[in-house]
Length: 111
Image (cartoon, rainbow, N blue to C red):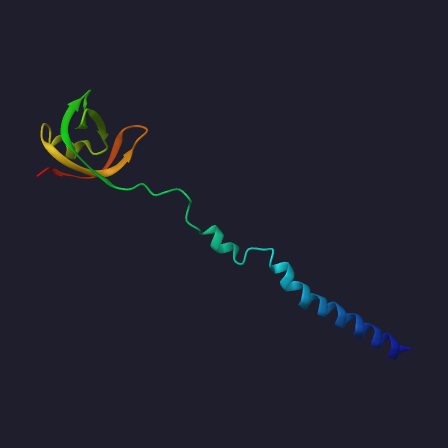
C-alpha cells in the first residue's frame, strides 16, 4: 500500500511540475517584460526647443521686452535685457506662447 501511495504522489508531483514549466511562459507573455523600464521611461511631453528672436529691447510698463514685428515678448532675464535698451539684439531662449514670455538663455547684439 505504501508503494502505491508513493507512486501516486510521484505522478501527481510530476504533473504539477510539468504544468508549471509549460504554463509559466504562457502567463509571462501577458505581462510587460520589465516593468522597471516603463517606470523610468521618459515623459511623453515634448521638450521645448530653443529659438532665436531678433528685435529691439524696449522698456514697457516697468519691464524690458523684446519687440519683434509688432509683438512684444516678455523676457525672463531683466538684468541682461537692461544692458541693451534701444538696441537691436538676438535673444535665444524658449518661448512660452501662451504668455508671450521668452525664457532667456542668451542675449547678444544683432550684427
